[in-house]
Structure formats: structure tokens, C-alpha cells
Image (cartoon, rainbow, N blue to C red):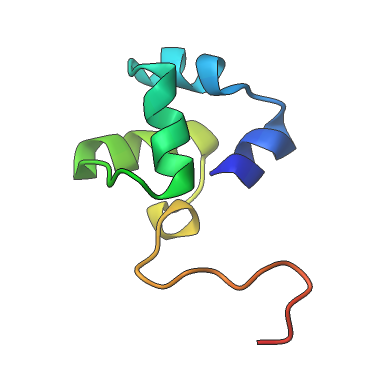
Length: 68
């Protein structure tokens, strides 16, 4: 989610305001300290106009530049 925010130039506070959540919630999500409800996950994906699995996955995405 942090990568999507950076690509679009959106701050945590701006994303939080658009989603109707506290800005700290965005930080918790990005650090993996909080799992969103299905409703919130779908709203985040809709905000970024991507499929939900682009934002959230059961397996960690490989690091950029990784050969794994």
C-alpha cells in the first residue's frame, strides 16, 4: 500500500480521509500490524483502482529487484 501511495503522491492522512479512517490505521496496515475488514480492503483497492489482491495477499510479495 505504501508503494501505491508513493506512486500516486498520496499521504497517509489523505488516504485516511478518503477512506474515513484514522491516519494511524494506514500506518498499521502498511506495517502489517492490522488486518483490515473486507469492506475496508475493498475500499482501499477501489481508491487505488486496482484488484484487491494487488494491495493484499496471504503471501508476502517479493522485494523489488529480488530474484525469488
